[in-house]
Length: 385
Image (cartoon, rainbow, N blue to C red; front, side):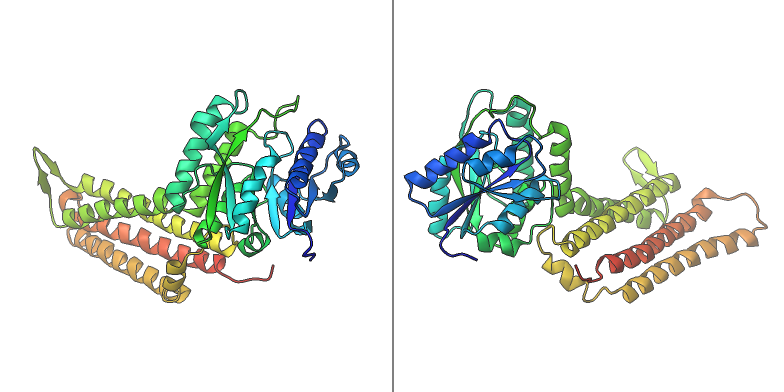
């Protein structure tokens, strides 16, 4: 790896013949005006409009990346880059690469990742659709800050810079638009020094529509963040549902409960049982999502969960599941015995159904524990990549 090149400007490219030359010239001006030892790398993702020839004519180095996707193109470009610092930016003239110099100075001062912020800078008229400016980007950035305790104001800004060591250590796995989120989430979780620089977003210079698809890619970003941090969407709501439903099931198994002018009885107990089962499903799904994210290295580490799994092994999970199911079977069995002793006559809901509801709830929880223990064990298997 060459130590003579300080900065590598990396631009992902897919049919950007209209704007690529202007972007390369902007990067070259930044290099010249600041006397940088730098290179320009075009990570071509399969262009068929002659973008490669334009890049070479302008003095950039072209790297072909076969795997399609925004993240794949950038990762391929970074792997081929030779600079100590990596600057990424789109090749559509929406960013001025001259604004990368303050980012480079912050990297020189010790920052690990420097984000451009369009919201703390300036967004020119026509540069961003209103739905992106006032709904999409602010909402997704807010969710990212809340879920991952990050202070980044603009999660999806395409102009950013970081050290080679930062990129290498984060092990970025996603190949699509999720790349932008994964980079911030992992850097935040690793305790890296993240700083921001206000920048200006310009209208892109292309005559064709952008590659970005508003609702599709927005949902992909949101879905990705939910998978990486299911605690707020699944785990905590699931625990609340289990606590409320479980308390009612236990209390109503002893008899009716008067609440104001209403009386909760066996039918309310059945509804509470449904709350318990749905809540448990949400909790176990959240744990499965975190195991998957950690195993695939697409999310922040989960040290607490990893310590917990040192105790909650597959075998212990199976034993716990069997125990819950057996207790439930015993409760249902006792109700069946009482029914048989009564000559299999009409059921008395207020008497017979209480142990049945209580028992079937435990049977369902035990079965779910058995199945999820097997799934957790499969997700956690270490394998060669």
